[in-house]
Image (spheres, one colour):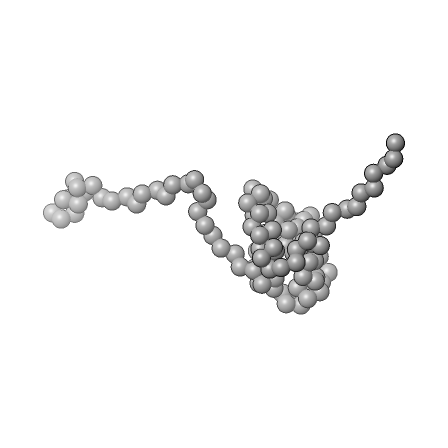
Length: 118
């Protein structure tokens, strides 16, 4: 029986366009379930795809500290995350998860409104 040769998969090799990078980060944010080091690692993958030295320069960080912050072994400070996202040319945005209904705004009852008028 012959052995199967495998190579290590590196997602950074497949992130070529800003749209692919944004889609990858979006997918990781959806899967993270509050795991900050996981998001940091995803940002590290994108930074490697763009060139870690250039991202570090654009973010105003040293290359070494950027590697450490985005290793996935720690939770970097939020200001570091914001600097990196900006250096990558990406933006964060918020949206209501699908399937969640908005809570109706509460209105005073007629009785409460009458008491206030009196």
